[in-house]
Image (cartoon, rainbow, N blue to C red; front, top):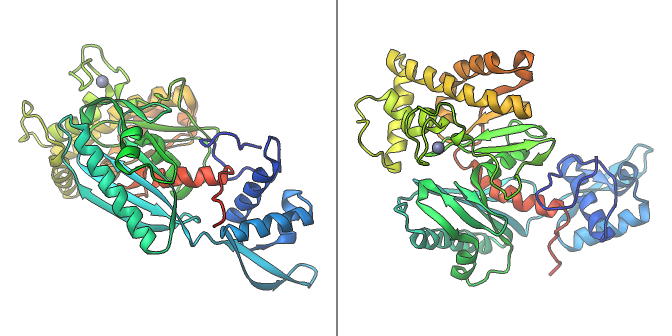
Length: 417
Ligand SMILES: [Zn+2]
């Protein structure tokens, strides 16, 4: 399968077909880079044999990649016919890809090197959610500056930065709606570019679930899976969907509003103003109120309380508290109802529970799986399995950095300096 156009296209295992569009050389550089990402260490001859590019072309491409410090030589080894060959690996030591996440109760920053290894992972509490995007942008800009400054200090150049936002984000980086943050039509990309003084690297803004599923696809236990769903477990429940190796965005980029699947028009009020959405049954607020009755139903839950309450629920579930276990079973069943709708539509191989769902996943998954199986048209839930994320709560930020690496793998290579 050949894919390559468009930076949202996943390029992890695209096979070695060289070229099909305008900039043949850039495409072929990316072909060699992707080959090395999955097969290094290997020799120039190995690359030629596997990609179908001729040896002279490969030599020239490798020289270019070495000049860009994306690839380096690591000494000699005997090849199959006994001749010594110089082996190549990804380098990227002068580079970093950065992802930031803003959520209702925290900010995170993750930087990855070219090979996907973590260079830094920061998290800090954040409560600027009272519908004041200006404050939030300032906090994001401060975090971006600190991250870039640390990486520069370590001798790395930032290749790109992607910001994850829990809301509807259009292709220009305008957040149409982020209910948890109290935002409506906030031009995050433009504001951040201005706050950062037009930095020299590409800056993108993307939905948090979309980025988290990219991270799972590249870095998580499900790496390489082409049909994957990630559910954010925060103030809202968003779905990042990869179908047939492509991120599913929809016409205007707003696909994956899983939390607002209407389960019952006469159900409880949802934060979106409608009734009976999945989120009203299985969002964090609902989980906390169901599991911890002492948290008053009338009290507005502050996002800063999510963490402590979820820790308490986790502790009680582990100790076998019957009420909490029943509450988690009920929550799992509601998630399963929603997942059955998704599974009947897109038949994912795997659904990953992320965010705060990760910690309580052992008690959600059995009931969710039963409900999914009962409501799936296909036998055995169409093969869909539900698992907990192995990435920590920085999945969306890691996905932001992954998004930068995807762009590099698609041919947006840094220029030599
Ligand atoms: Zn809703």
